[in-house]
Each structure stands twice: as structure tokens, then as C-alpha cells.
Image 1 (spheres, rainbow, N blue to C red):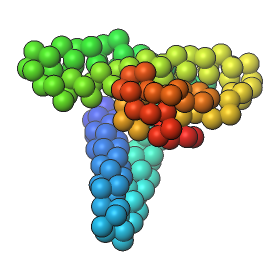
Image 2 (cartoon, rainbow, N blue to C red; image 1 turned 180 degrees about the vertical axis):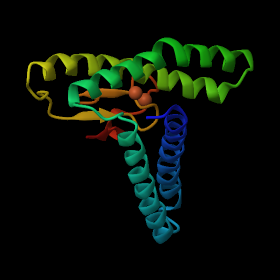
Image 3 (tube, protein in one colour; image 1 turned 45 degrees about the vertical axis):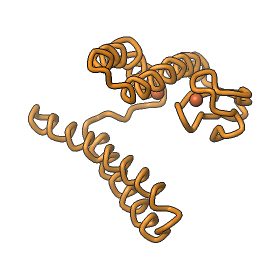
Length: 166
Ligand SMILES: [Fe+2]
Ligand SMILES: [Fe+2]
């Protein structure tokens, strides 16, 4: 792909991905009071996901599952080793307490995610699917566990009973 089109599609992928996420969060916020507006937010969020998918495919960013696991591992590792440590130092310097907390939560979870992707690569490269019953995620900090949740989230102390199961 020509360089300028590639840069434009990358930017469009980022924008559509953000819109997808924002509209889902806006739908969550609208849910109780405006259920039909929430429905509209969710429908348009899905349309933005379709656009993001088309852009990513056009960019050649979707490969076989082993390639995708490697890309996922690389992304999480970059966030843990470079991006969030640097972002945290800036937030600390600027005494941005709320940002510091959201960065700490994300960095802790991404570290776990990188480990999960690394283990998954080993299993999938042997030709098998993962042998897991379920995965649970803390709704406050994103801490992720395979199997049963802990009594309390080790990162943010949220009760394990509130974890979302996948
Ligand atoms: Fe992650
Ligand atoms: Fe948590």
C-alpha cells in the first residue's frame, strides 16, 4: 500500500476504534434513563466497528491466529514496558492523581494480559485450543484472571463477585 494511504487508514482505524468504544460507554451511561437512545449508541458503535475492521483488514493487520497472538503480545508488552511507565512519570510530575490511577490500573492488567498471550501462543502453536473454563475481569481496573475470581481484586480491592465472566 502507498505510504500516504497507509497513514490515512491507520489514522481512520484509530478514530473509528475510539468512536466504537466511546459510543458503547455512552450507551452504558444512557441505559437506565434512555433505553432507546442506548440502543442507537450501540448500533452506531457496531457500525464504527465494521469500519474499523475494514480499515484494519485493508492495512493487512489481521493475520492467522498465531500471528495475531504475537501482535497482541507485542502490543501489551509495549504498553507495559514503555508506554505506561513513561505516561505514569508525566502524570506524576504533573500531579494528575486520577490519570495516575487509571494508568496504574491499565499497566497492571496489561502485564497479566501479556503473560496470558505468551502462554496461549505456546498452546496454540502446538495445534490445540486453550483448556480453560472461563475468564473473569474486574469491572473497575480490568484485572484479568483465568478460572475463578479472587475474593477481592488484588489491584483495586473490588469484590471478586462483581467480576465480569467471559
Ligand atoms: Fe491489555
Ligand atoms: Fe480491580
